Image (cartoon, rainbow over all chains, first blue to last red; front, side):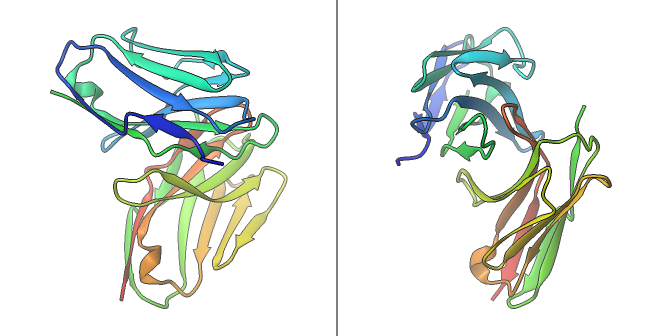
Length: 113
Length: 111
């Protein structure tokens, strides 16, 4: 299995631009999670989906952030408009509902200038 | 709200030593506890998963214990090697829910 796939691996954009991060979970996994990692706050859960349905988005920092999971093999995290304080590494993870071990992707390093 | 604390924040030891990393959490109603390793600029690699009904898990030179009632877990690394140098993260929760992470222990093994 290829593991969790994220794209792009690096993204540099200017403040005010729209940013879209993509994730392909491990085939057969039915839970998907988006996390953000910064030096100051560590790793934080943003949102998670079970069977493509958003369950808890209380970690999404602002309305500028949105996430979708149109099917079992694809999810996006969108930031519009982006701000310099959004600079961080964004991780996607997936798991089986009844297994609970989470497998992480390599992350997307976002820099907003 | 669940809070996870890892002690120490950083640790540097000579190669060959046995060492213990500590993790504590405030809410004992957890589904499981997972230990991860993160190398600089890389993603997270799962090391061990302990279900809430278990007391410990072992993988090679690694042993993790869980005491739910006291809100504590330890990761024991035997006969440390320079390749063990990394940041070790403890996370609780899981199942169909997300994980709450500690800030990690930055470990350096001196050759």
